[in-house]
Amino acid sequence: MPSTSDLISLFNEIADILEINGEQVFRVNSYRRAARSLKDVTEPLAELAARGGLADLPGIGKSMAARIEEFLSTGKVAMHVELSASIPPGLLKLRAIPGMGPKKIALVWKELGVDSLDALRARIQSGELAKLKGMGEKSVEQIAKGIDFAERSGDRTPLGVAWTLADEILAVLRKVKGVRRAEAAGSLRRGCETIGDVDILCESDDGTAVIDAFTKLPQAVRVLAAGDTKGSILVERRGGGELQVDCRVVPRESYGTALQYFTGSKEHNVRLRELAVKKKFKLNEWGLFTGDKAVAGEKEEDVYKKLGLPWIPPELREDRGELEFLETPRLIELSDIRGDLHMHTTASDGTMSAADMAEAASKRGYEYIAITDHSRSSTIANGLTIDRMWRQIEKIRALNKDHKTISVLIGCECDILSDGKLDYPDSLLAACDLVVASVHASQRQDRAKVTARVLKAMENPYVTILGHPTGRLINKREPMDLDMAAVVKQAAKTHTILEINASWQRLDLNDLHARMARDAGVLVAINTDSHAAIQMEQMKFGVTVARRAGLEAKQVLNTLPLPSVRKRIARKRSGE
DNA sequence: GCCGTTTTCGGCCCGACTGTTTTCAGTCG
Image (cartoon, rainbow, N blue to C red):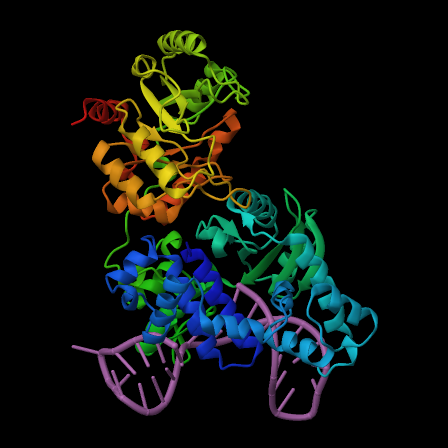
């Protein structure tokens, strides 16, 4: 069964090859545009095509639609097959080298027959690369380093890793003399689940001082560039590989436009500048201009305002229709969160007691938490036997009586077994305040089987929340082949709440799935799945996903006061 | 290749930086 993501890679590959072949850029970009458009499609492509909806997608015209149809019926695209045959199989890997664009790749391939990282390295050592037209000593050196980088880095950096790193760097830069404002821009500010480069923006009149401090950061393992207004470094990344961090310094009057500009996304910016041109403005990182006169620049809000738009939250700047907004959406914020309904203790695989978790949550200002340790089948996670679970219920009830500042709900994270049955009997589940039901085993079942399994579990009246619905681990494990449209439909029908698991390794549901839930009127819960108090900090990542999905506070269970939460649970149990 | 409240043809966002140049091409975001 050909998947949409296969088609997306295929279109991007067509663009890459066309570019190497010297095709005109607008034609090349049309394939990238089409690929991007497909990324936002949540319904199965075949269904979309069947109801004639392909042409409604931005960037999909007659020719693209025909290629998509071809892909759906044959599993391939003849044009792609032909193009692939026109270049050596390993050539596209050279795109991962910073500084190697399509022109240089074409050059080394055609002049030297280079078709892989190793072949390129060999030509550098033999001195042949330096002899090519346009290749000087510095270019060769940069490419040599780029090959190492390409081999070491690979995956994009998870949001949680990049966020922490940016916070550390910002703490240092904000202390540099003359720095008035500093924040992260780019995909990090937009809250993307993975980050390419980290972008930092500073407001200061002394760029040299800022870049100096930036390039001397203890985290910097190499300095790539250091100018008056811009610097680039490589830092070691937690979890291996290296990560590029760019820092830019602008004066006060340009900070707003620069922040807008460097936040992106690229597609959003293109749209915005098109709009600016239509309204006889010129927009760049230095300001919004009519002629030579700046009409906005200091504040990001003003840029949007002058263009006749409400301020658009960074998480929504993905060219998914946000330029049509009439007002700024009131997205959920971290401060709206009143509790955390999925966490573990030493009873199963957590590292702290329920009392300590409650204490920590209370300090965060939460009104309630739920203790949800693993069920008996999760033996690796020291899941609780039926007897132990009954005792756990008593223990948490007692703890709740003792605790005055926070309500502690007794719950469990109950395994959804491979046939869709639950790991505890209903009598035990009924004794809990709430139940998170999750798949942990047999995640590789086929689509029909795994979907039926999850739908069946959702029918159980005691299943409050479907935990980390797809089971994916970012950069580590693919999601289950779950029919999310069916899951969302079932959630609406059974009043089951879908989790956005806020752990940065998971972020599951992702933004698009959470948006599907929103559109179907399905309630979402944002939980950290904490195994230690410190992990409750990850709530911000889950809130970020929710914001990218366009969720408001009222669409999220754990922004509600406890009586309302209980009402929602009761509603599911009563089947009304 | 896509697209249209000035267009069905002729546009398609914009600037910085780098290196190898002597006026610019390529890459990047």
